[in-house]
Image (cartoon, rainbow, N blue to C red):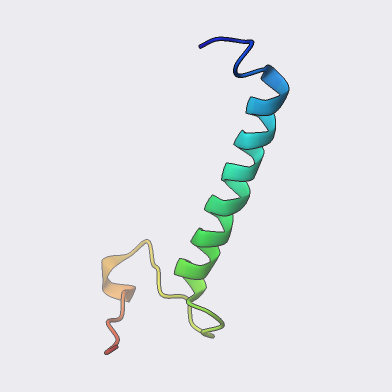
Length: 52
């Protein structure tokens, strides 16, 4: 990696932006746009399938 092309401050800012996006996507997937019941579970027995 060339520090002239990719300075540390730019990389730090982009990394922060990436995790903002990752967290947003995770929230959408987990809570599915306002659904009251989460759609993820650590236990397979608690996973419910829904018809789309």
